[in-house]
Length: 424
Image 1 (cartoon, rainbow, N blue to C red):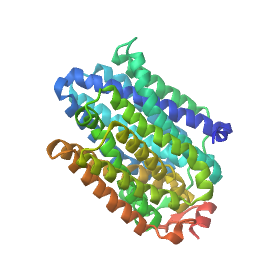
Image 2: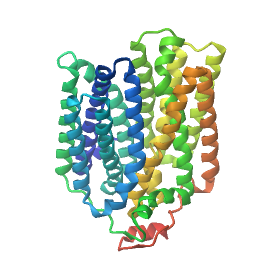
Image 3: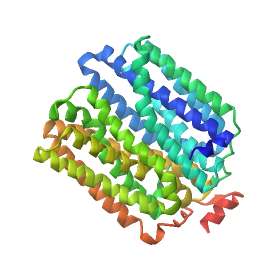
Image 4: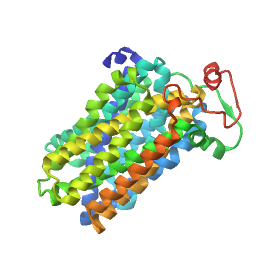
């Protein structure tokens, strides 16, 4: 899997992604401590609002940026996003009011909503061979999982030497290093495409690609399945550990680590699996596994038989199924749309994949606190079941190997021969 790092351009881009992820992880820890200093017992409300702002920025900004992405050199866009994120991190230690956090978080996440889809759309052009690209997707998934384990440990170590404000400066260094790595390589230019219509039509082009392409409609349902299971893990792990199992705070990290370990194992195995199986034969069974595992765990919780090993196994299985459903997404998008439409499609996926979390995050927390953990698990399992069933129905079996190319929703002009070949 790691042989793709021999490609200098991809190696630098992957390093930029990994370093930026570590910086973001440090900022997350520091932001929690800053919120507590500013709001005390109300810190959860501050962080909850900040997370909501993050999702709103993700959903709203990415499509707008994609409308102009073909006019801006990719390297310029990526470096500018890194510099904005670094500037926000530099300003965070000096805030004195919660509303200042909200404004800075919006700019930080707006920059991330510009960086990530552009980065994702660039990789398939840097690594045009599908075998190489599949391995790059697994490496990217691995980077996210390692960051979730490594950043908190690094932050804990650094906090023994510096204050949490110092973590923000570590974040700045991370984003500057990411920008320097992007500057060090030459990136392919966006395909020359002109679409009719105004800014709104261009911004919604990617979403309409999803609406008219069967495999991408199925991907929308898969996004809901992933969010349903993920919300249970992210929102309710601490309550399950502390209240239901009466274990220590340190066990929360172990449980989340089990989820990450399951995801990493599958990310390492997927390249070989995808060499022999279609995306459909991996992603749809994974969505089924998500609601089955969550349903079994919820049933055990209701029966009062859930134990510490049971939770660890369930979380590891949920992590594995999440990775199997999520990792091939880039391959699916790449094969479903013409190359000229990749920036719009990746921006749409970035935006639309975060919409379900706006529902599942508050649902998981509100139901668990007001009605009970079994009710929360039952509701999320039901959502997972319905979305998995929709994905199976929307993705016909005959499209499992060679997905049909997305139709031209808006007239395009240009000399992108590959786009016309795929659309034929």
